[in-house]
View 1 (spheres, chains in turn brown, green):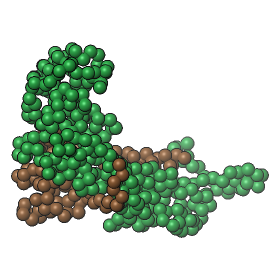
View 2 (cartoon, one colour; view 1 turned 180 degrees about the horizontal axis):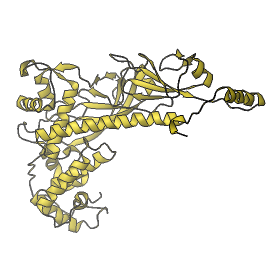
View 3 (cartoon, helix red, strand yellow; view 1 turned 90 degrees about the vertical axis):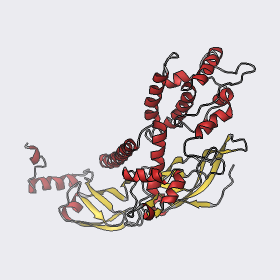
View 4 (cartoon, chains in turn red, orange; view 1 turned 30 degrees about the vertical axis):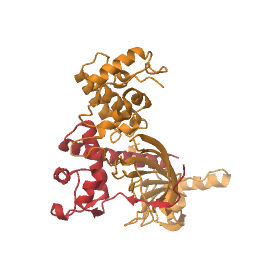
Amino acid sequence: MARETEVITGEIVDETVKYGLKEVCEVCGVHAEYVVEMVEAGIIKPKGAEPTTWRFSSLSIMRSRKALRLQRDLDINIPGVAVTLDLLDELESLRDQVKSLKQQLEKLQR
Amino acid sequence: MKFKDYYTTMGVPEDASADEIKKAYRTLARRYHPDINKDQGADEQFKELGEAYEVLKDPAKRAEYDQIRKYGATSGGDFKPPPGWHSGADFSGGGYTTADPAEFSDFFETLFGQRAARKPYEGPGRAPFAIRGEDVHYRIPVTLEEAYNGSTRGISLQTHRFDKEGRGIPETKTLNVKIPKGVIDGQKIRLRGQGGAGFGGAPNGDLYLEVELDPHPRFSVDGRDVTLVLPVAPWEAALGASVKVPTLGAAVNLTIPPNARAGQKLRLKGRGLPGKANGDQYVVLQIVLPPVDSAEDRSLMEAMRQQMPFNPRETLGV
């Protein structure tokens, strides 16, 4: 069922901040208090001094959604989610390093 | 329809207590959660687990299921519900949502009905039956050339929409997606509203595409930086030389300093993947010996041996 032919341009998920608190709440389907809790736990780090001036990146939005899924599916509290996300980040970066080192090694051994 | 043995799925005996079932669920959910387990198939196992738990955690559902299970003969065999089967229990839907109920199996729906499948979506702080669609995550393989130049890619994905009765109907969506120039391995592209369908007027979820860079025959990649192993002749390394080096763009000339060592790393600034700050290209020198075939070649090597006393194993103490 190929219905769409136009080319869709996505948004690269990165640290560029462009979303306000309201948008984060909408995308995640949560109350502002919940986002404040996530910020306090260091799960997401907005720019700006207070909630009304907070600006979030698309990376924060993705992270919030992930945090919500983990909390909902595994029944872990916010500090637990924060630790889990940090460890998952570390795991991912180590996997990347291993992948890149393996590639280099292969080329040197040829 | 295949019979599903929820006890096997959860790895618990059929006389397991509610506590044992909960424990088994938590252990397996941690192992197969798609945000944690990146293996293929983990996603599927997590869904099966969610469905099994949805039934076994609820005493009324479980009693009904046990009855069916006795009737339903062998696990994995062909299954038809008993004539006139109708589920009497109402779905509690309490606690937290497990899997995406729109994707519960036909087996589940035959036994417990569609409404039951949908119910767990309701939760505190959410208006009933207006739920934003799930985010969909997909990995797309991208070549290094595509990452360097940018490209447009057709992708098709399995998702679902809801009909008027709220039934999830599977559908295949085909999208043409722009892969922006300078994407790097592991980077995600967010396509707003292209994920799972929202329910009851709520917006769709987002589609996240994770860039998976294909291994390249020449270049190895680390973020925006690329590395190339460059073979050089012994005299190029010894005397210095200007040699042609392939890059992601056009080839460039690289100056090799005299007395270069094997494994030495040279940097071509800004020749990596493009970005706010371009990546660099690193060139690792590999000294390659020419084949020594003729008598003349051998006498040249012999002359080197006479003239250049050299112990390459000095650091090994031998």
